[in-house]
Amino acid sequence: GNGKAAVAPTVYRYALQSSRDVSTPQVLFAQALALREAQDMDGALDVAARAHAAAPSNPDLAYLHAQLNFETWRPAARPFRDAQRLDPENLAITKSAAQALFAEGNGQTAISLVEKALARKPDWLDGYKLLVTMLQATRQAEAAKALFTDAIVAQPDNLTLQLEYFRY
Image (cartoon, rainbow, N blue to C red; front, side):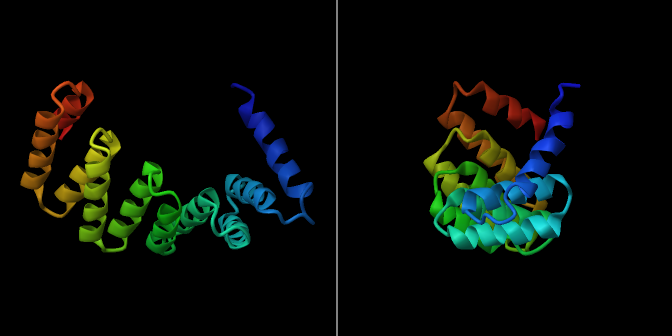
């Protein structure tokens, strides 16, 4: 392949071995990623939690901690919302927060979160796709269709949005 697969284990092994006694948030972040790559999800979550506790105002550490909660089937909506408060313009965090809220049974809150993000960023295509999926899952197909129709009227030159409309 591209050599990435051969290099990755060496890089991760180095991150784990070279920093055993160092606990800066950046090193802990690298360790958590290495453990995640090695499929030690509980270890990754533990290290990510320590990294986040060491630097609670760092949105990247908050996001990693939330993502690992989600990937290990633990409640993640609150950790994602915490990460979102640290970086409210990060649409990847918004999307993940909405997905976690929806998965945890808070569908209307998730829908509202995405609607608010779309109001701020009307060209966020992933937001439309996520919102339509959530609306359809909650048996609101007409609302999903109206969402795309309204967005296309508001953004007539957005061909990507129009193409997505035909996928649903």
